Image (cartoon, rainbow, N blue to C red; front, side):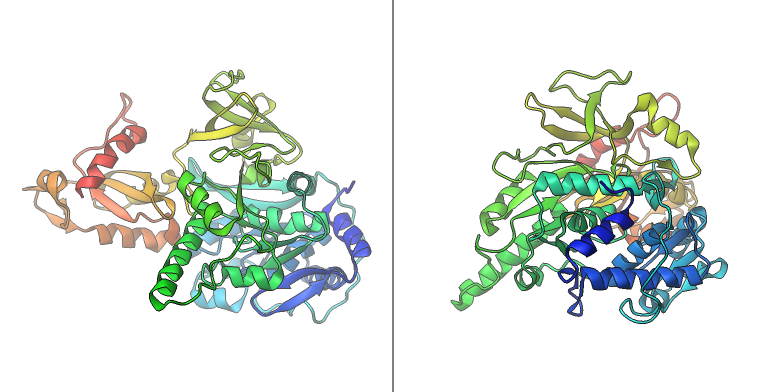
Amino acid sequence: MFNNIVELLNFRTAEHSDKPFLYSEADAREWTYNEFNHSVNRTANLLISRGIKKGDVVSLLLPNSAEYIIAYFACWKIGAIAGPVNSLLKAEEIEWVVGNSQSKLLMTDDTIIASGSLNGVREGIDTITNWPPADAGGSDTIADINIDADNEAIIIYTSGTTGKPKGCLLTHGNLLANARQIAEWLGFGSDDRLLTVMPLFHMNAVTVTTMTALYAGASTVVSPKFSASRFWDIIEKYGVTSFGSVATMLSMLLNVSSEQRAVSSDRNEPLAAHRSPLTSLRFAMCGSAPVPAEVLRKFEETFGVLVIEGYGLSESTCRSTFNPPNDNRRPGSCGLPIGNEMRIVDEEDNEVPNGTLGEIVLRGPNIFKGYFKNPEATEKAFAGGWFHTGDIGYRDAEGFFYIADRKSDMIIRGGENIYPREIDDLLYSHPAVAHAAVIGVPDELYGEEVAAFIVLKDGYAGSPPYEGGVAAALGGRGGSLITQEDIIDFCKLHLADFKCPKTVHFVDDIPKGPTGKLLKRELAKTARDLLQDV
């Protein structure tokens, strides 16, 4: 129905001119569809005044805010490519993303400048650090620009399996297709209000709770960050009907509820924070990693709100599957395809029978265009005409899909994708490290945590408090002491905190294959026993 996002925005503005579209929870501001569209036009004209034109990349490094959403749409208004940058990254990581994308302009704010995250980044790029409030100044009209569905709308960087992150190119058509698929599958309409608490530098927040709201003619509420203690107050104040989440958020809400119940019981007071099924919230949309069965059960039992699991990647814009938003859902399953094709294949790309493990491959209008300046990776990803996800799963007889494992070594920590290769490469640059392997280990709150296993060079020894077999293995080695904190601090100098190991284990050897390759899967099998001893 629409060739580009601009057409969708203009259509919804004409249809719902005076209806609220965007709420800023942080400061109680709001925009009607008409006001939002004018604010987008004013910001788009600001970009034009800085020389931005169709096809240029504009890097967006902002906290969750109404301005962030307006900046996205301002880029799309003029055919520019929005380049969201993960605000958790360190300066050298940000410099890589901004430089590799060939960005022409960086939009940021004073809080990020003050944090030092942009040290060295701003020297080679035009920067807007104090762009006017989105509801003030500038022309609110803009000339039409020819934008096709195949034109790029977003370049978002995914962690690289073999080194540096790759720029994933998503088109106007991709975003429109996925918004339509989600809205239709989950039955969103003009009465819905979707809450964005996921970071807007991820596609979940852009697609599931922003673009989908626009496609449905609904409203969206943006919050600076997730707060378990304030969550239900936000739901009640804005009449939120659904929100995007990861399993960690559901666990945190359950933990707060348990603590408040205990306090209320001790004081013999009624519990205000324990919401009844009469809340406006219809269901929680959850992805990134499977929700533990017990967390799902307790959440639904405690709050009377369904958890609708889904699956997807940045390369599929966001969601490829969702469970049905009703009692037909399958807890533990990532659901059914919502508009793209999905298969399970073997190593030769042959489809396997139901119940058989294989790699998940995708095809459809929401699947990305390719990796920026990386034709080799694009060709490999689309072998046989299907996008190869690297995830291992199976399909049951009724067509529901299940995620069983990952073909790559990727770690998912609280919804953030982490590729160990990036951390391994850094660890090998430490003067004391001979061999290193990073793996994900189970974590009750975050799903997985990062653990590093290190063989030290001669002349170095790991420091206590390591006990049992690990300490014994180090006995008598002598030399300079290297502590867990030394390694973690070294990583924090170069990597975003969420990527850094939370535990470091000094060992005498790491399992290797016949070619000398470190066998991380073998290490993972023995790591559980080792971790119990440490």
